[in-house]
Each structure stands twice: as structure tokens, then as C-alpha cells.
View 1: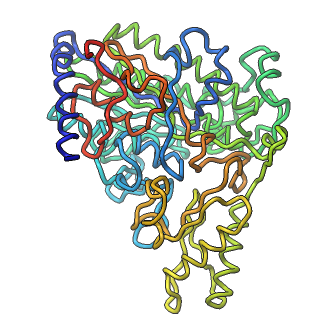
View 2: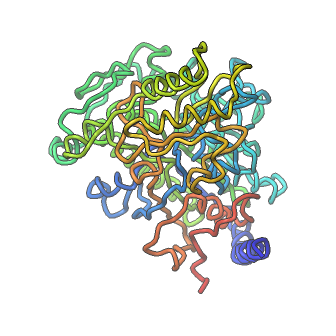
View 3: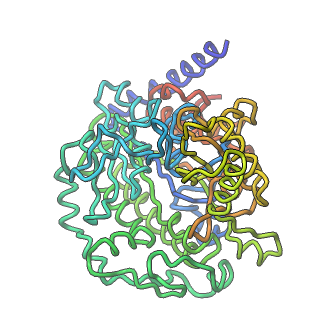
Length: 527
């Protein structure tokens, strides 16, 4: 019965969009744009709404709430969720790192996708199901084009999937956008020209100053925030970001406003160079901007740095959206969302007279190791990985791995500030929100989740990774000529797995294979 219902939904989608596809070809094509803002909380757009003006954030209107139904919220899995329309238990990207053949690896490690310089293997090969871009290629027999641009490799690759024409991300060794040879053998002409026109040296003297009057920051942000000086910016504005070109500058740029400029410039150049929306097809552009995430980790959610980054993103996006609208008129549609939010720092929580706790990964590891030593005797290096809510244990011939995982989970669950710690063998009986974040061959031995308003971190000031609203409640914005929010969803909370089916609706194709949710939009002509 479920399959019949799903087919009816898909048939309804195809009937609704079939005339639109013909219209797009007659008018020269259309462009659908997905923007993902890394670490954008729903609260952020309420917090600073007066600064966005009547057009809303980025000129894309007012936000609707969406909540991830997962225990762990991180960049790689949630970009994959937005692009595939399903959760990590199905798409397989359970974290920024995952387990392969019993060992932890980065999710983007892909032996089939060497980068352009031949220094790393970076690709989308860990995805187990197709993305919207993959479905677009299948549906149009390769005629439609798709481009993904991001600062983070995992942002670009897991939006794109293997079927995109190109996925661009930042190379920290060269200070340029790069890609993998599984997409193209080298930079296309339009990208090479862009990077000649805008070399990274243009930022060597950049100083980050506040973009708005002091009164705005005095009202909306902390006067002084705790900070992790990962980039050498210091704790007060102005921040000198610029250095002589080299890896220090190339890394510092990611946590400063130029990261947004670099990505949006490349996206706009790609629209022109690839003639997206201008060839009689409906094409797809996917963008991920991540400066808010880097600066949020370093300075916290209530910092002046994060507020100014948000406001500058709004400015950059507004100009980008305006230029695309001028270029394509009514033939461009926009959907914007986020991969996750962030928990306020312990200092911010404490200042509000709430119980702010900063819980270190080392504390959790020590609890697990002490319990394992007591149960099984002392062993060298019990833990292979502890990060992003995942614990991976080393295997020993004299230790039952199931019992070891359960022992470690029980110990971590007793640490103050932990809500749930579950061994892999016990996952089938858990709540759906935990199971959505778990894949049996990729999730390691233990999943752990903190209680609300607890920061679990290493050197960072703020963190994310929980099912609570600070992390899991994100905005959705859309500007989609000819479509409106589905009436049944007005006033409700969307599910991020609805983004992929919605993009498919706008593209005039069926949703990707594992995207079973309904689109959150409906054609304006539909009753």
C-alpha cells in the first residue's frame, strides 16, 4: 500500500510539472537554485530580522521552520539529507567521519575521485542513494546541467552526488577552488578565468570590520565573547585576516566574510560559463556557504563576529539573488535552508542564568576507557575515534566487541550532561530519531547525545550535533514563481527531507529514488 501511495504522489508531481517543463524549453530554460547556509539557526533569522528589511534574509522572504528528525546534526550527513530526501540510515553518510572496514575515515574519502592536483581522493562515493542532481541527469538523459559550489568539500560533494557536472570546493594548499577528476579533468575555462581575475592575493591585506553601526551589535550581541583563537584574529574588532598568500591565509579566509564572496562569485561565474537556465532546459545550481559555521565554532552563537558574518551573508546573497533575477527574470527559483544550527556556548548559557556546561570529548573518552579497563583489563588505546557523537573502539582478540561497546555506552551515559549513549547492538530498540542517524556498517560502536544546552567540544567554543532545537531547528526560505507553500503545511514545521522532492517539483522531474516525502510546495494553480 505504501508503494501505491508513493507512486500516486510521484504521478501527481509529474502531472503538475509537465506543462512547466514545456514552458521552460519554449522560454529558453529555467534555473533552480538551492542555497545551504552552514550553521544557520531558525533563531538567527528571528534575532536579526529587523536588519534584513522587507525582502527578508537574502531577499528570499520570511522563514518557515524545519526540524531534522535525527539525533546527530552535522555538515556531511545533513547536506546529504537535503540532496537525497532521506536520512543517514538510508543515504549512509552518518557523519563528517564514518567507519569503513572497521576503521574511521573522512566521509569524503573516495578512491575513485582524485582531486585535480592528485594530492587527495575527495568524492561523493559514500552516498548509497541518488541526489536530486543525479535524478536530473537520469530524467533528462544528460541534457540538464548541475553545478555545486561550496567552501567545504563535504558541502559540495554531498549536494552534488556523482551525477553533477561539477562540484567545486576550496583547496587549502593553493587558495583556489578545486574539484575531483570524477567530474572533470581540470578547471573549465570559466573557472580558470575567474581565478585569474580574482587571485587569492587580493585578500592579503583584508581587515574585517563591523558592517553596521555599533548600536546594532550592542543590542543584539555579546560585548565580549569567549573565543578559540584558531585563526589568530584575537577577541576584538577589527580583525586582521589578511596575510601573505600561504596556507595560514587560505585557512583564515574560511572563517571570515571573503569565504562567502568567493563561493558566490564562483556560482555566478558558473551560471554564465555553463549557461545555466539559458539552453532550453531546467538546470540546477547548488551553493553551500560555511563562514557562519567556522566563526560560530570559534566565537559562539551570540558573538559580534557571528552576527556580522550573518549580516554580511545577507548582503552578499541579496546582491547575488538580485543579479540572477535580473538575468533570468521569472525563470529562476530559489530554496534556502541549513544543514544544522548550533548550541550556545556555555558562557552564553550561563549569562542567561541557565545551566551552561562545556563537556570535553576527553572526559567522555576517559569514562569509557576506565570502564573498559575495569571490565576487560588494561589494553593499549581502546578508542580509535570519538567525535560528532560517535565512538569507535579498537578491536582486540580477547575482547567481545559487543560487550565492549555496551560497557563503554553505559559509562558514557553516566557522565553528567549526556542524554543518551547507545551501543550499536542495542540501536534497533531505540527511538526513531536515534535510528535515523545510525547505519550498522558505518556508525561505529556507540552513539552518544548530550542534553539540551550542553556543548560537547574539543577546542571549539560552540558545537552542534544534537536533536534539540538549537541544533536541529533550521529555516526554509523560498522564492519560487508559480508555486506556493502547500496549504496543509502553513503554520507547521517542515522536515528537511522535503527539500529534495521540492527541488524535483521545481525541476519538473520525479524525486530521487529514496525521497519519499511530499514536496512542501504546490503549483499555484493546484487546488
